[in-house]
Amino acid sequence: MPPTPRRDLHATVSGFNPLLPAGAPASRELRTRHGRIDFARRTAIMAGLNGPPDSFYDGGRHYDAGKAIADGLAMVQSGAEIIDIGGESSRPGAEPGSETDELARVIPVIQGLRRQCAPPISIDSYKASVARAALDAGADIVNDISALGFDPAMTPLIASEKVPVILMHMRGTPRTMQSDPQYGDVVREVRDFLAERLYDAMDAGIDAESIVLDPGIGFGKTAEHNIQLLRGLSILGALGQPLLVGASRKTFIGKILGLEPDQRLEGSLAAAVAAALGGANIIRVHDVAETCRALRVADALRFGFHG
Figure 1: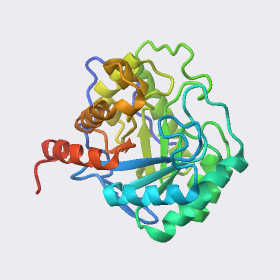
Figure 2 (figure 1 turned 180 degrees about the vertical axis):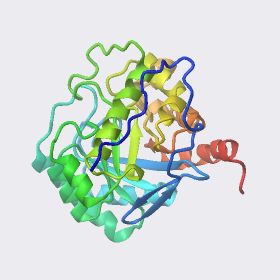
Figure 3 (figure 1 turned 90 degrees about the horizontal axis):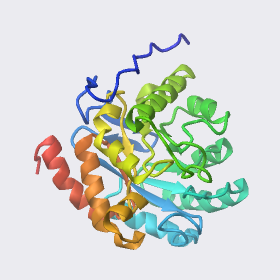
Figure 4 (figure 1 turned 90 degrees about the vertical axis):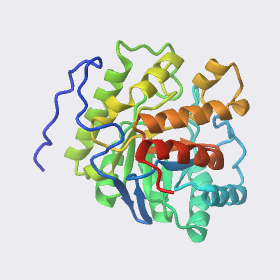
């Protein structure tokens, strides 16, 4: 395959001329094995369903497979269009988990949800072996926090399976990412990283229309970095790919409000609305029903009222 032509990425953030309007990815939908996600007139909601007992915010809440399946079904009933299932914690300071534990946590949940509901399922893993087993069990999307950087077998797996992939920016690893993160210009540096990973994926045979980009809110960033990224989403959107933002209940919201994770609902809703109006196409959340209601109003402002 000939190399993909690469755009000039060296413009500064100030005065950057977007290639596309905010909120207008090159593709207006994401096609999966179990349906499509339409971005043309609404912001899609991805519900996070985390199995590890030490996961951020919801650690231990979905540890039992039966409860996780029931919670996932409730999320779909509340309006989630994608269920994102993870079996290894990626909270700040987390140590790598074993493949055996990860598989035991995610595969029964994927199988159970696949039997009982229709929406696409995402596997949150950077391990190709886990992603392959999850796809075989019925998952549709791979959500890789390493942007295909940790496991060399992940890129050929995505290319051969022809499934959508989410490429996220993270500096370091979950264990090290919050050790004094520094950037000269966080929006430009995240944009450049995502652009390189995007083009590398395309060069490896992954369809551009199957690639979603995620700035990695809270992954190797200070509160100020996260705020700058949310304010600069239109610059990331200029890469022409759908954008996913996951800000729900995160530490920067707690720093603004002075509140613990279980008190950050209103702040999370504000961040979700700001992200949608800034050009995000998928919002990853913990509080599905509340975010659905907030985004209905945000989408009426963004796309026009169609009710």
